[in-house]
Every structure is written in C-alpha cells, then in structure tokens.
Length: 178
Image 1 (tube, rainbow, N blue to C red):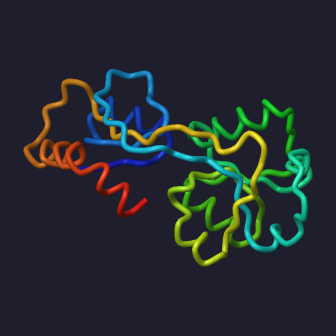
Image 2 (cartoon, rainbow, N blue to C red):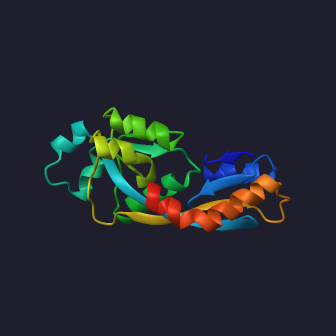
C-alpha cells in the first residue's frame, strides 16, 4: 500500500496511473474519486522568531516587503496562498519556492521568510516556540483534508480495513492527536 502526499498534479497522475492506492489532498482533484473527509485544514501565516520579534503590529501590506516562502506550482497550499495574496493585491518582492510542506517549515524555522502553511504540520514547532503564528485579516483559510482513491479501484483487504478503520475511528484520532 502506498500513500502519497505530494502536490496535487502529481497526486492525480499517480492515482490515474494506479501507482498510488491512496492520497491525502486538501482540494479534491477533477478526477473520478472516492473520498473520505478527514478534518479541517487550517492555513495560517507563520514566521520564525527572527521575524516575529521585528513585527510589533503586523499590517497585511508588510507581506510585500518581507520574503515569502511558497510551495511549488501545482500545490493546493500554493494555490490558496496565491488566491489570498491576489485578494489583498499583495505583490511580494522576494519569494522562495520549495517542494514540500516540510521544506517550507524548515525554511521558516531557519528565518528565511514567512509562509502561509497548514497548521497540522506545525504542532511541535508551535509548542516549542520556534515558529510563531502571525494573526492576519482573512486568515485562516479553511479547506478539508481528504483521503482519496480512484473510483472503482479494486482494494486489497488491508486497504478496505484501513478505510473502515478511518471511518470508525476518525473522530477519536482527531480528538487525541489534533
């Protein structure tokens, strides 16, 4: 069994070619899928300590002056961030593009810039205070995490058991771990 959490374009390609059994997505691709909604995906603005200490009263227009870290083209997180920036007519002067949420998180933690990222992957950094949330008008952006697989896919008994386990225990897992 393979679970893939890469960018949306690669996820769809992998599902279509039957290379991936399941994928976790926050935006459902335009493809015949079975989908299980898992939980909210909250996208918020985050920075490392270096930037947080510089920002006393953060104004949304500051995003034009500070370096922003983006996910790669095709990522649902990137699309949500671009939609947010366009809504407020923000044209960042400096950006850095990275291929995974983990890479973006590490770059933010290292003080390379700010980013709009999923809250779900920052639990430890927030509890240790190495990454801070910057409250900002228009955020959080809320989408949903979904487990998806190709419609009509012949599932193994293990895959069917996983789906049943998720459906039965989803709320308990969310309550205990998220």
